[in-house]
Image 1: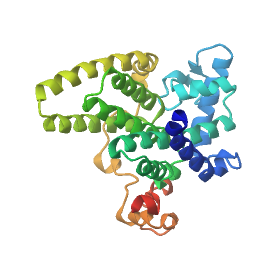
Image 2: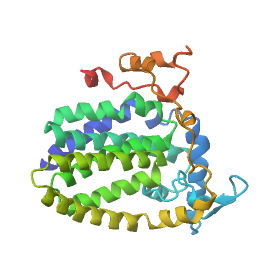
Image 3: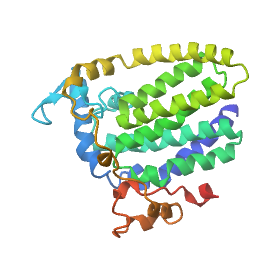
Image 4: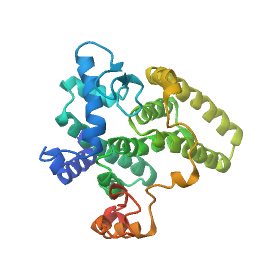
Length: 303
């Protein structure tokens, strides 16, 4: 009975998400665009090598051959991909499973964060479903590295806030694991944004603490644990990144005007009430990519 009381909300969230995503969860359709062209071939390569007993180092099939282990968005070091390899060869079915898993991880993560913040399970269920099935998530279903970043975001924020509120080593370990999943699976842009956001949240909590010396000692000790565990978990990824860093051509500074791409313009705010309106071909919407205009969270979420 106790197990059912703890798990019934997670199960309800999962059922709602799976039913809402029935074109994918029932394998009626496949993800489009980047998912099948930019992620499936590279994950197939990883599974092909691993299942043959080799590390996925050199990929001879893409770009006339390149070091696949150093591709930050290939999923080569992403633990979810390695777990899915237990099912066999990574194919289009496995890709659909991973996409649906992103929605489930996002929903469960937001439920965990919201139930801790609001101390109300029903509120947390509404927030979780609103987040997992938001226009931001559904619109980005073809960009799996975006889905992965949004899926682990609430887990990272939850673990970080629990640490800031006096949580023990457990939350330091969880934070390192969630950060590792984000870094190895999501677009590097999500990691860069976290490098700004998490310290800002920490500083804000530090300024509000009654005993700043105790707060600093607590956070300093747990950050040391988090950093140590994170480096250990990321060891293969870091070696690959450092090894290939001289050959990356997207690490330099870009002109400011080139950075303003796919903005969420004022006309996109109509998607909070009318999500289908932003698929219009009117020029006021076309400044932003079709998959990045939708912020719908449902009427329950708005209310």
